[in-house]
Length: 362
Length: 88
Image 1 (cartoon, rainbow over the protein chains, first blue to last red):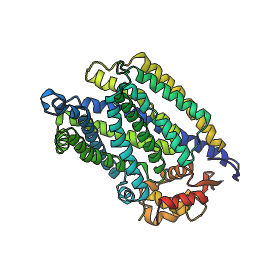
Image 2: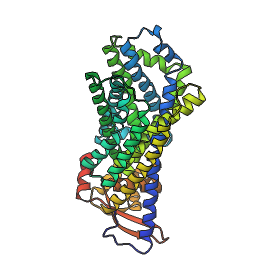
Image 3: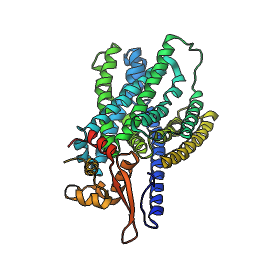
């Protein structure tokens, strides 16, 4: 929003600067909240998947194949969370009067773009992430964190958004912080086999999928209200994850095509665990809509850079929810996590200041 | 009837220069009951569209009470983008 060649009476320019400043501050706050709330979503889903019927699912007596225990159950967890999140998003949209616009938006070009972005970033990227984690280990955590850089490149190339040297430096610092935080989980001794290479490729696919979703979803939110976009996103992800992906994975694992749906159904009516998925779903709804909204207000580079703080908030929320509230051991955050968080703050400040400068020069 | 944000952008795709109050006046027949039609929501929708290059600020003014009035206009690229994403 440049002030070039604009006639303005005394006081108007100053008032506009104030308005812009408040818009930027709000955008930054929303983008940062997306990362913070993502941590809550991760923690409640993690705890939910360790409670009630899930204990049976992961138990030796479940009768599920080894493939199902690793892959299908991850998809089932994501599906249960997304379905809860979709129901909450619909209720919330109805309360704030956006349901009519949801029906009017879903079968339009921006609506279809949001559906495609949700499929790419939801079921596809999330599955690639789990596959990568299983095949190559935690080395893919920082690889997946490249999604912010990919989003920034997509924003620059497709939407002509600002991307200066300073912004790239900010993204690199944030990426370094994510590597530091993720490094505590690095597992050695895997060797560099073909499986590892495929796993790393899957990690890149996850980064690509999330990068596409963040940039494209963010841009679409300058046309589709973000309260409407989140309903489209969560309904798409819930249906595709729950019906298509879970069935497909069940078939691939030799558990029978109906197993995935049955697992989702049982988990949805499991009282001891479902309330955690409901809470996780509310967190997910706010997190993802703030991700889109932040990227639409700040641009993909800054919006996704701020969202990248989930690398710290994920373990932090798990420490609070799983560790302190539910008393599960093993969620302490090592020093790398805290130092990584501080480095990430530096990266975001560099990114935000550089973006502000770049947009004023544009 | 289009979603509110689509209607706002389509209004600018005619090439008109308008401030938030002008947009509200033009769309009030269909959208005045929408919660997002209030001043704050409309300002945010216009600023988001401007920060993504669909419309641009064309001039600034102050109203009789001394409040800031921002006028926006969609340029050729913005009009093309709006029309490519949002059909009539």
